[in-house]
Length: 78
Image 1 (cartoon, helix red, strand yellow):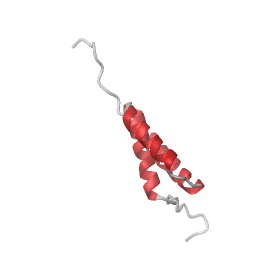
Image 2: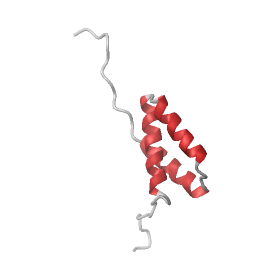
Image 3: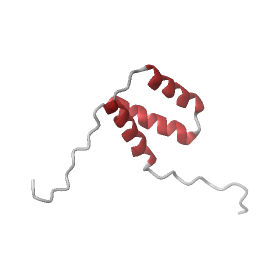
């Protein structure tokens, strides 16, 4: 490794919680209230440590960083 190495080890502490954070962000973006409620209940019942919360937030932020695909416009004349 060099003096100014850009490599970072930003691996999540709990990959399972990271995936749950991604699923939560996907459900939020697509308006799936049922999935959001299920994930929220799952988080509430499990005792989450600080590392688990950080991994969850990292997964959520990773998906939120991806810009949404623009949909097609309705009511446009061709």
